[in-house]
Each structure stands twice: as structure tokens, then as C-alpha cells.
Amino acid sequence: MHGILHFDIFLPIYEKYLRQLLATKKRRVITIVLSVVVFFAAVSLPVLGLVKSEFFPASDSDYVFIDITAPTGLKLSETDKIAQQIEQRLLKYPEIANFSTITGGVSLNSQNRAADNTAAINITLKDKSQRKLKSYEFADVVRKDLSDITLAKIEVAGLAGGPPSGAAFQAQISGDDLSKLNSIVNELKDTLTQVPGVINPNISLKNSAPQYTFKLDPTKLAQYNLNSAYVGSTLRMAIAGTEVSTVIEGNKEIKIIATFIQSSLPDLTAIQNLQIVNPQGQAVFLKDVSSIELTPDVDKITRINQKRTVLLTASVSAQTNSNAVLADFQKRIAKYQFPQGYSISYGGENEQNQESVQSIINAMAIAILLIIATLIVQFNSFRKTFIVLVTIPLALIGVFIGMALLGVTLSFPGLIGILALFGIVVKNAIILMDKINLNLRTGIGFLDSIVDAGKSRLEAIFITSICTIFGILPITLSNETWTSLGSAVIFGLMLSSFLTLFIIPTLFYMMVPEDAKH
Image (cartoon, rainbow, N blue to C red; front, top):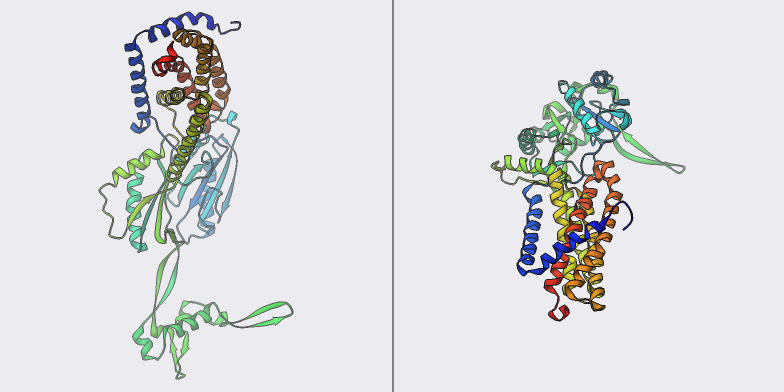
């Protein structure tokens, strides 16, 4: 061979060990059994948690968002003062290129509705080459810096890796009574806050501005010959107006609204002194048949499967795995007793991760079936098809062991990499098997056919594998999102290329019919 890689020096060594391996049944059996044991040990690594899994890893972006939520009812000017205080602190960070502030609104990264007590700061970072901190590391620094500001709730977050997804952690507490749900979710929030790596815990049940509620007394209504519907319609007309008719003028429809003169109801006292005329023509003060209360209100009510539900959500730090947070939280609340009629379920990123994993598993099953059908047509043999398919578990050995040793997380792109790996490693076995069949058809002895096929295809297998590895290496190192995908292909290909040259010849020698050996 000509070039930098001189495979000729490895051929005598490979031939020697392959002949020794095939020489005795004991060595062949030990090799196969050992491969099976290593395979099951490798696939147990994700189960044991030695290979972490997540939907998409945290990635370095150019944006960081700060959401500010002050107490409900706070004036816009006071909210702006809090935002200005945060702005002054941001000026000291050299990583920031610029930032913009919206007071009385929300950022693109927030799901809160605009209100006078909310503000948002959208930060644009300098180019990655001009800063030492990654965006999620910078978010951690800013979050710690702003932790002493207690006048408002401050959330600092960067763009999540991959496509839009739910919260990294999301618990869904369902029940009938909102006050009871609020009590439960606040207890669970305290538990969630204690889980390492949790940031920005949040509850979907938000308090809105309180409202004045007129509580009608049925006894007094009956005493004055009034009913709640009549009192309610009169109060509605006084405050908001009531549509009594419409007028058509040209092509326009004009509504006629009957209402009180605004100056006649300048304050709450005037509304309480509102006179309502009963059917007998007697004027009755509103305060004589009702009492007024200032009651809290909620911003929105979430329903899942037609049940009132409060969401407990949180983000996790870049160094923390969302699945580990969920497992830790479930362990901490294992003894928590939910009241009758109240339950908890989980969604967000973990739910999407499970759905994505299931879709990839389905795709893998279809891919394997298509590979099997192609191999059966090609080789006209179920045994040879099985031998070729053995390269798939050989590849998984390299994937899981490599990820465990280097601490690479198995993400959704990593599963895509495993799916792509199936076709790559099967190709190596096919070209090896094809050469064995060619040697047998030309009359070469059975053992010599296997050994010669291994020697002649060693260079092709390793060269194609090396080219594939170097080709996918740049994308593996370019971004955290694709690290898992590239690692799956690289680790799986490295080990399977080596094992294929020994396991496939061994299985072929052991499984082909007896008449093929002569």
C-alpha cells in the first residue's frame, strides 16, 4: 500500500490472530460470549445513569433574557426604577454588546402577559471569540449578581438548545379548588427549590389586580322585592353601560349604549349609594342589599384534560440534567400525600423527550426491518443476514462506553446519530461478507476464504471509517447541540470497525452450513 497509513505491516499480525481464533472451538465460543457480556454491560450504562440523557443540551448563543416581575399593582414608574437598577449592574460586564429594556411588557423568552408590574431586558452578547464566558455561564453569573434584589422576582435565562420545547422541569397539579391547588403547588415549589441545579422556579397561577365584589344578601333582596339579576343588570349599566339598540347609518351599524354619567359615580362610595328602583317604584340603596369585599383575582386558569391545573415549572443549569432533576424531585415527594381528588403529572421537556425517543425507536425498528429485507434479498440466507446484523450491537458497545468515559450526554441528536450509525456499520460487514462469498465461489478453502477476506477488506474498512470519523469531527466540536450526534457515530464506528474484523469471521465460521466448508 502507498500513502501515510501502511496497513501492510498489520496484515501478518491480523492473519496470525484470526487463524488462532478460528483454530479452536473454545476460543471462538469465548470470543462470542465475551462480546455478548460486553454488549449487555454497555447498554446497561444508560439504565444505571452512567450515561446521562437529555432532550437537547445547553448551547452557547448570543442572547440572554432577564424577566422582571414586581408585586401586582405596582406602578409603571416604580417597576422602571427596578429595571434601571439592574441596568446599572449590567454596564460592568464586558461580555455585553448591547441591551434593550421594555417596561410594562415582556421579552420574547417570557410567557407572561404585559402589565405595569413587569419588565424585560434583552441582552445581546459579543461574538463568541470576544468573550470568555458562554451564554449560559454568563446567565449564571448575572443571576447570582441580581439575587440580592428582593423588590421583584428576577429570572435570567438564555436561549435553549435545539427547537422550542417545554420547560426543563414541569409538574402539573390538577384539582377543583384554586386555593387548594395554590397551597399544594407552593409546598411543592419549596421542595423543588431544594433540588440542586434548579433555577427560576415558577408557578403558572398568577395573581391579578384585586377586584371589588358586591355580595348580595338574599334576605334583604326579598325584603325590598328585588332579585340578583335585576340588581346586577342595573350595576352593569351604571359602570360599563348596556346596549339597548342599534342604528343603521349608511353601511355602518351604530350601537346605542345606555349608561350613567361618569361624573355621577366618581368613587366607590357613590356606587354604594347607587339607588335601584324596585317594581313598586321604591328607591333602594345598593349598600342596603349588599356588602362589598376586595377579593384577589387570578391572571389565568389553565385546564388540562378539562381539569383545573396549576403548572410548576423550572429551568436547570447547564451542568444539570433535567431527567436527574425530575428523578430527585419525585424521590423527595414520594411520601407527600395529595388530598382526595388532586393529582400530579409531569410534562415539559421530559414529556417531549419521551415522545421523541419513542419516535426514534419506531424509526430504528423500521430501519432494521428494511436492512433485514435488503440483506435477505442480497445474500439469500437468513444466517448470513443475522451475521451482518450483529454489527449493530457491536456499534452500540462503542457508543455507550465512549459516552460514559468522556461524559457525553445522550441527547435527541445522539439518537439520530445512532440511527445513522446502523447503516454505516452494516456496510462494513457487507463488504467483508461479500469477499468471503467471492472466495468460496472461486474454490478457495473455507478457512482461507475467511482469512483472505479479512486481510483484503481490512484497509477498505479502516480507511472508510477514518474518513467518516474525520468528516463528522468538525460538527461534533462546533456546537454542543451536535456533540452527542457526532460522538455516537465516532465512538460506534471506532469500536465496531475493529470488532467486525474478528466477530464476523468467527460467526461465519461457526454458523454457515457444513457443506459450505468443503
